Length: 423
Image 1: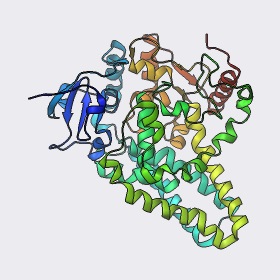
Image 2: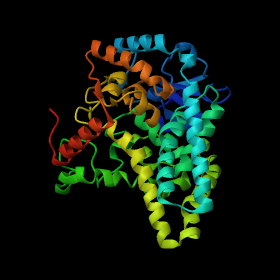
Image 3: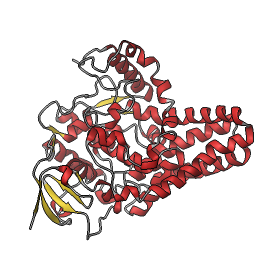
Image 4: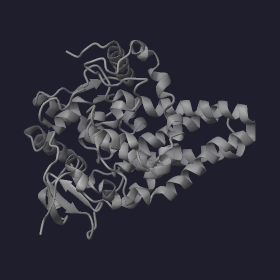
């Protein structure tokens, strides 16, 4: 007999809800691995469609239906003409079964990982130099942009083992796989939604990304925030390495703003390996330079390396959804096409070369439309995506280079600080 759940808070960690139907995640094998348990106890209507781009009824019917969720949000709708044509055209270029990492991506992944271990071993044994710290900072950023990003999106391999293993690349550069997944997947589901996108409020009140229509958050000092945007981004590594949330593996900003509950057994079971990797990382990056160079010189070495990594890693993320034409109120209507929202809240810049360096983050529109597709494929689908967007009258924002995108971001940030309303 089907059980009636009044609201999302009534869901236990061994069930999920999709479009008002409650499914058990016990007693069957999920093709994508145990990562489905990360979402246990939540309404994942948006996340399911987002992750399973080429959704069909056969896929969802694999899960045992056990009940009904009476009250749930329905801010986005799917199966529009735009979505259907977009998927049809992209499928002609990349078959769903072949959308994982290409040979070229695997070679780049191997190169970045090899460079990381060579540099960090040298750093631990011999101490840090200016050249070594620069190289290590950039390489760590490349691990974050390329390896762990694709892996934690489940985009590298059909086999969950490889995605799971390479996803720990986040922990090897000062972050946390479990915290990153919680924040990043929520950001993908509700991009630029000030109520539920944790990235939209990640730097408040010191720095405002969202173009508020009132002055409840904005202060006079924010008129100059475009001047300290880069310095704020340079602290990305420091804020990550100093975050106490690694102890609980509970990204509080996600649960606070989005209402999604990640306090479940799947996350808790990852504590030991996460803590172990954090201790190992701090020992290598923070303790070893003290042994080689003394306390004060070590502070300079660590700080310099962290700034290099932070800027290389954070700038591509920051400019992707914060630019002059970005949609800041994606759910201002009662219900909106989720795929349209992803296009109009994101930007794309450059081409293949930028994609090789940023893990496809320069193709942010394509990435948000097909987050489980390997970033190696984005240059190939980009022309088709733009063509379909133009046909359906959906704004597609493209910049020739990262510098054009960054300039637009700085202008947008300045306008947000001053309080200029978008027309």
